[in-house]
Image (cartoon, rainbow, N blue to C red; front, top):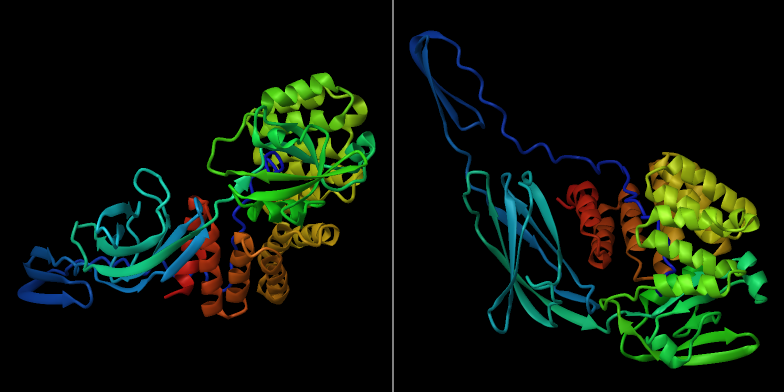
Length: 480
């Protein structure tokens, strides 16, 4: 549902369970020792270096035997991958005997046509190597469902190639995710009071002109209470509904308009379609109804999401004084500061948002993220716990609590595992639940189970940079 996500970026909350950083640097061969001058000819070979030194008096010659070419073994590849169309990921792993750069080629098993080649950006140390690959063609189109053959080869710094490992996987695509073309904001108490409706749910600030929602009959001021049977009275419910929203299939969007109930039947567009620009229509909403905080808040947040932080701040500065003191205003300012990597200032804004409304779940989560960035893990864990106490179905808050508990030390791994298990049970499509569970299992000494959970999370993760960090810090060291 467009417009409901926070503008802050969630950090990669990776942590140090014992042994997570073991060994990426053990693969470089030691430099050969300098030969000592001798008065008689001598030939010695330094063990394990491949270097032969021959000396006569002070005249020495060093001949270096190149190391052996890389040898690949132990291919790791899922036999089947199931994902919504547009969100499929592939995780390919192998072990290399020497430092090398991996290359993965994917071909359609039926047509034998090469559809994708991916080469690792860097030479990887000897040992386990994984590549996280979007399941798309070279032209960035989703791979169609079917069976694919994968070939993995490595090249060392001397440009020598390894043997080739091959395997196959079956790709099954489920219904694409849909997106409602309406911009919504949470019904904070101050907003609900102005609109004379109960708190909870999502207020429609605007609908895309000529879009699907307006064609179905939805309009500004409506309150969405459930989407496809999933209640959206809390942020956790909204996120869960968004993950499960099918495109191209009619679903019911339960909506209130005053005392009336409207179960709209809407077929959503796929999430890869170009998102509407809500800026102009939100500006119109503010002009037409300048007495409503909801529309002013939606307008400022949309500016922030569009990357215009200065315009968002200017909009807030123009609000009437009571609005500037509202929980919604402090939340948005906190998100802006957090996005600018100013966690200390963001923490102050989130604290003010919570003081104005202790039930403001996004502010409680923001407080936890800011405390995490400030290396105050115990307090961060408490902040996420406060968020889950208010919003008991917030999978993300449970996952973030697990991360914070692990950062507080391996002794808290059992608590972290409980929180991660809760996150997964609430939303099995939330990658952070599986990732947090994997890290907690590793910290608890259950590395094989942790590796499997990490892999499940990585197959749900669309963030390539974050996937690479997870692989380097946690997956490869624990999957020898």
